[in-house]
Image (cartoon, rainbow, N blue to C red; front, side, top):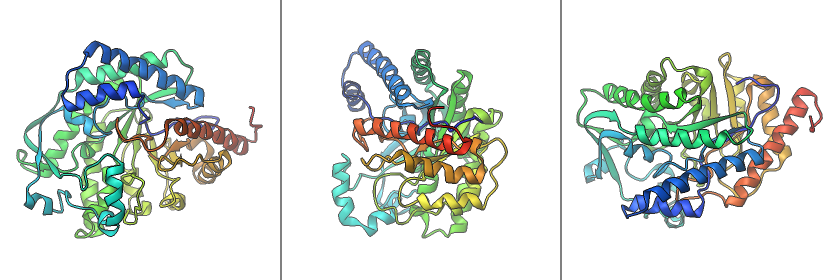
Length: 399
């Protein structure tokens, strides 16, 4: 989306309101609840969060991912047939390709993670489970995606924003620990997943919304697979998954799509993250109109320089995270502007949009910042984009 100013957006997930969380808890725990009351609460919550985004100055808004049960990726378990979940066996936990055991960061900082998991409402350590493909994969979430689309479009119709997007999971990130017990090969399994996810993607596109593909597990799995894999082996592994995503995107207009990656994005050490320079060419192979990536957190902010060494394909846009989800410190608008301007000097002012590193909530029950801080950060994002516009286009801030 080319523009004559720096537009703003975010990654998608926002802190859920308490009344909605109560309904979501009951659905997760299998308890009885009033379905009509839940649907009304969900619709009202989406309307409110879209309005709040507009008031904060966000140009391209989302539904906050309020319609998803589970996390940004695990929601898909209720929309895909042919896959079951069960506790992992001892041998499966040791299988590096399933990556169910402790990751390298966890092994390096055990004392931190022993405290961190309970704070995040996670078991210590999380009980490993494995997803198993036991039959033909098919998409079953038609009713749920129609509901999410309807709620977002109704909310946007009552606001004055530039556009709206729905974030949904990439084929691989849908089931990153998927064990194949049905398809003849790994490639055929991934293509089957891609074709199932394509149905969700097309529903969003056909509704006139922007499609965001979330693929956090693609970079994150590096630190779970290397070692024992080498970097070259990991890149071949990752390229197969990029190919599957492009299969799902075939024929979908690039300008209506965006691709988001992060490094797992929890607020921990991240000392084993793969450098952006080692995967930026793979990211650019994904056929979308915009790329969203972490650029505000202290482990990756320096990597804006990686864009000096690659050519951004024509008519594509970068959406760096210039606001962090991992701290309650509110970024100064001047810092936001600085982050935007330095990247715009590399790729062009019309090809940069202001974004966030990742979501402000990790699913319904884990928030990464206080909700009041979330809105302060988004206001600072909008103010910083105005300052960047003034510098890049030579305008006064009020223009």
